[in-house]
Amino acid sequence: MMQPRLAKVLVSAAVVSAACLSGIAIYHSKIGLGLRAQLGQQSGTFLYALQLYNDDDIAGALKTIRPLVANGHEPSLNLVCGFVNGYEPVAATPEACVIALQEQPTQRLASLTDLAIFAQEWDTAADLIATRLDGGDQTAHFDRARLIYAAPKGRFDPADLMAALEQSNAAQDPRGQYATVVNTLNASSGGAITPVLTELLTRQPKLKASDAYFELAKLMQTGAISSDLSYVDVLLRADQTGNPHAARYLAQYYAANPELDPTGNQRTLWTAKAAGTDDPVAQYNAAIAILNSPDAAKPMGEAVALLDRSAAAGFVPALNMLGATLYQNPGLLEQPAAEVQAQALALMEQAAAKDDLNALFNLGNIYLYLQDQPKALGYLRKGASLGSEPAQALLDQLGAATD
Image 1 (cartoon, rainbow, N blue to C red):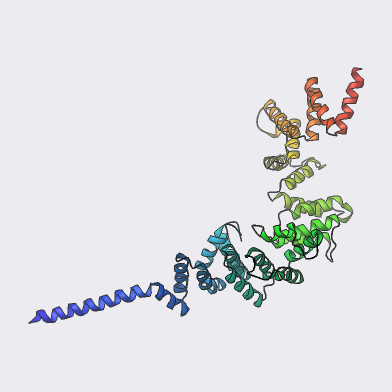
Image 2 (image 1 turned 30 degrees about the horizontal axis):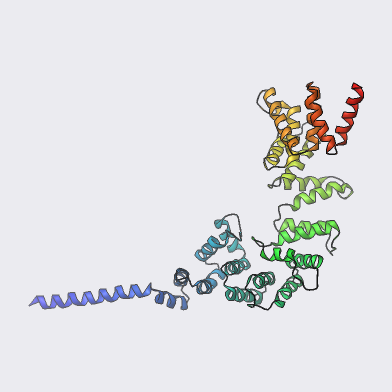
């Protein structure tokens, strides 16, 4: 008598279990994820965006994940950084990119815009730009110009491109200011899009504010443009926004204008900062400042290290100076003096092979001292033929001595 009841219970349990499994399947299905996204559930929205991406619905995926990105949802920021940091890097690594997006809310939708433009989702990119402008992000004007130029002809009104650049310029975005200036300086006809402007709009990674400030400073240096800001102020903005070369230019400016830096503190400050980057010219300049110092306890080892880094980057004057410094001071290295001087000669010979006039003159002098006149004359004659006045003067002396 118990078997029918047991069978009924088991059947009922099976029905309930099947219903639960069916519910779980629906919950995690595309339909279920879509419903969870509509209800504002973050995990459901994120998974739904991934499902749309896997179905090649890029526009749908971007639209779905957009509110999560705007709100700083970490998995969504990870996803965006994983895509965008390879071609429009926000930071050195995807992990650092996520931190940067967490700390810079306006950059979140800017990076999503970059992703939409890269994916050629023109309408999605336009919608993102409109949202950013509505939110007060004036940097979106320049991205609008980039979008209009990148999109197929007929997608947007061509007149809107120059309007976007003018709005970027009016918003004091340095990229819009620089683009407007170069287009004006290089335009062959009114309203023409010049090759220089084309390069700015299609550059990858895209033109950054720091790059634009630096380029504007260089135009000011040549006298091509003027500004309410001074040359130093524009370079300071370039440095503050992350340009790696601005510090070297500031150091060179104060070196060329010592009356503006009577204590030499500004030159020292900017030289040291520039040398801390991977700028080989700045490293060379910092080394020269040490070598020329009257201080008896000057850090020669630091100068050699700076020259070595600069030379390794291919800066030819550093090859010569490193060689000359080690030839005169072989004790700076732990190897036997003869080995150090042989390496020093090899460094100067590398520089001489690249027509460095100082290296040619130095080698001429050294080989004269070593009483190898044929080799010495070869270097001096090459130097003189390339315009080295010291090499020519020494040749004249040698000629007078042997007449």
